[in-house]
Image (tube, rainbow, N blue to C red; front, side, top):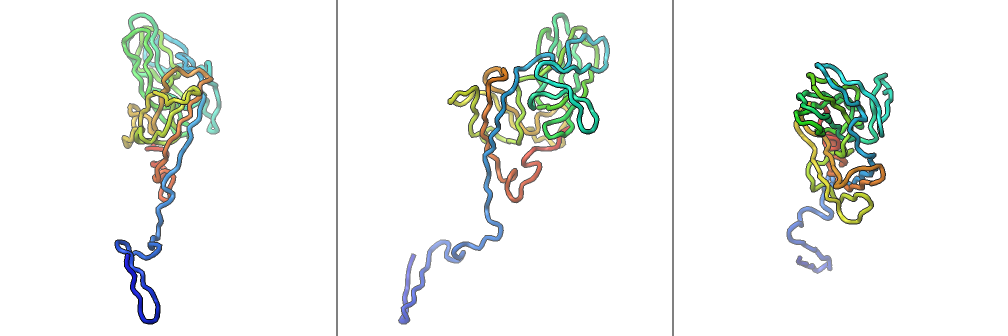
Length: 248
């Protein structure tokens, strides 16, 4: 920085580098808000293997009978559709019974936390007494179709894969994950948002999920701090930036 004076006593101060930008710099748009922190706070009930559809031997292709069990309830949506509503957004599972299973595709249809229609295909597999988790976080289930006979009883229930209310595209957006009142960082598993566009019945969750390090039980609380970028909350924020691609 330099200064010069004249006979009249005036002083001109010249700053090197950003002198021509003015003080302050003329910025028509500004830079805020740069982001926010979202606190995801939930106490999930214990997962169940048959609280959406009880164990049934499917002799052929058909539809599963939905029946609300522990931690789920039957509700009627404003459009008149009767659904099984979960305690919180979470992935569902398909569980085979004992015997020699024949694999079938279970097509689960329903809605996410925001009421957007969604579908996922989960293969039951050929291994007896095995639970196969889905990837998408459902909030309501409206129907389940079965592609073929299973030869053994198969049920549909809930998992510990919890659906995040907002999109995170990288695990780095998770500032902290507190679980079960522990001060130490939880060592759970984060699965980032699947940005495949358009989404399909086999792609992952459009916002991202988190699986805690120990089983849910209706008492343990998840307190997850998430960094929310400007594309989700800033002046040029978009629906995609906040909630991910459209469900399918």
